[in-house]
Length: 239
Image 1: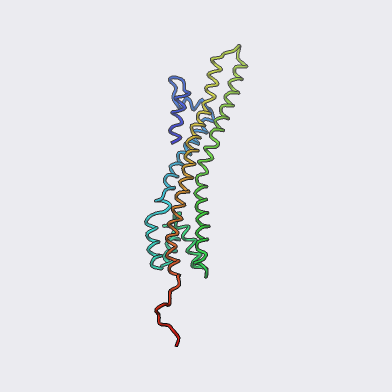
Image 2 (image 1 turned 135 degrees about the vertical axis):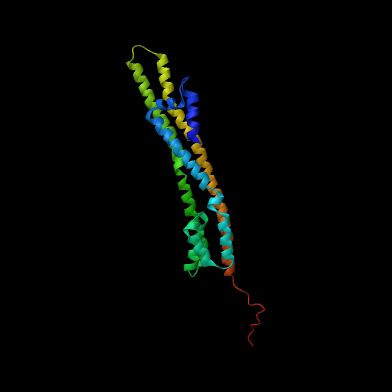
């Protein structure tokens, strides 16, 4: 998205009549090409995040149904094996696998399972956060790169005026306008990157909360299976 918008906005705002957006980017020099490459990287990251950070990917309905069925039948081993199967790898199965393994291996597993699930949930959520750091980094450095390109262009513009005979205001204005191209490119890239970075972070928070509710619902089956059975009506009185 950003790589599509950047060239046209830059071309409209800064390109002379008859010049293409590519000509304008070429005039931006090395810094302009770096910003263009970063815009392509940002576009790829946005597509990946839109595909991965969604409920169907993190909390697949089919996996929820399968785990609910196995745990309601008391098949804890089968549920654990299902979560550990690489073919079923997802945000939810990674968290459930940690809890079910703790449940199986510890004599106090039923009391420790919630802490194991919380730890795994925090780790998986942090992993999703780290995946979005690239987009946030691009949004941070893009304006700085644009400013760097502008400073380099301004130095060159004033240097050319200093070495020219007399004062040429039109040439100076043209050089300054060209120097500002990289700032425009950097801001055009940074604004959507920062906005999408915040959007994906909020989306992760919402999906993590949904996942916590679903996992808590699944764990109720384990708690009910270990609940003490009342002896009332068993006729077990001692005479």
